Amino acid sequence: MFELKQSGDKYHFNLKAGNGQVILSSQMYASKASAMNGIESVQKNCGNDDCYEKKTAKNGKFHFNVKSTNGQIIGSSQMYAAESGMNNGIESVKKNAPGAEVKEVE
Image 1: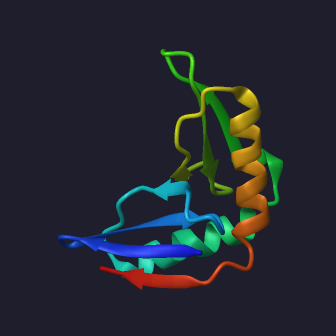
Image 2 (image 1 turned 180 degrees about the vertical axis):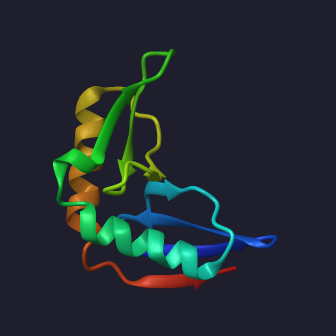
């Protein structure tokens, strides 16, 4: 499920797995419409391996970004202790995002 939240005058979203864990968090968007476009972009592009940018942080933990076709980062993952965890996170986005409902939360 995508949770769409308003923070002040900006919007952002989280993609959550069935167990409620946050898989992906977006940047801040100036409008609700822009945030919805970001969600649609994740849903449309998440099956394309080229849209994933795998990263290793300075502390040795792993994370990934989902990028749109123009190269802009749409969302970022949490930090994972192991590369296998990061890869499982990517698979979870691929599985959960395409048909996920969007729910507005306070």
